[in-house]
Image (tube, rainbow, N blue to C red):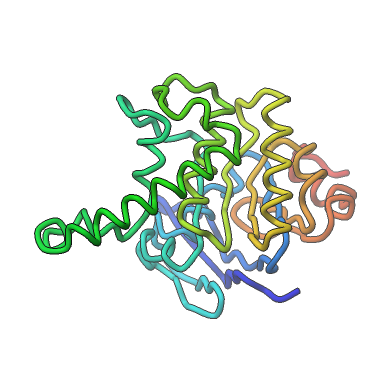
Length: 254
């Protein structure tokens, strides 16, 4: 397995406090990688830095050999690196299908020249996206809710819709921020099964999560962060047996 995403000496400060402090780690292609750590370890900030939501103060992020440090989020997504959010974005007044169709990037109909002079091409692109969106909704089990208001979905269904938005962008690597939060056990089983299937189809994953059952069941590699720094890496069994991890979570020597 080769390194797919590499993070080298990444640093981000907010008001003089280092949320990420010289963090170095890598995600391997074709695997599901877990990112765990106590509250305040900097896990979500790290996702924001990788995905272009926030610019680092120092360090480097590389994806498939491309330096993406500080690159805008939409450009990073166009390379195939897509993230989801811990708190699912509400799209008031839109149906499930409509909210999904807002996801594709580089839609020609959103440009003045496309809307005015390339209408047939715009319509073809919109039809292609609509067909793809329907297929994705069918796959994740939300097609029967396509015409329902997205705001009426349960917490777990909203997490599935967030994953569908990522899939519509044809990702190579998906960064998931707490996919288990607020999800019922039956829907969590569905989400875990989908992640495994997508991994087997060639999509890599990085998962920030507090649910250790999910991490233990899904992840090939696990990285532990503490105080904005890499603490230890390995398999789930290896990292959870490390006294440094016990100390970081419990605040006392093991």
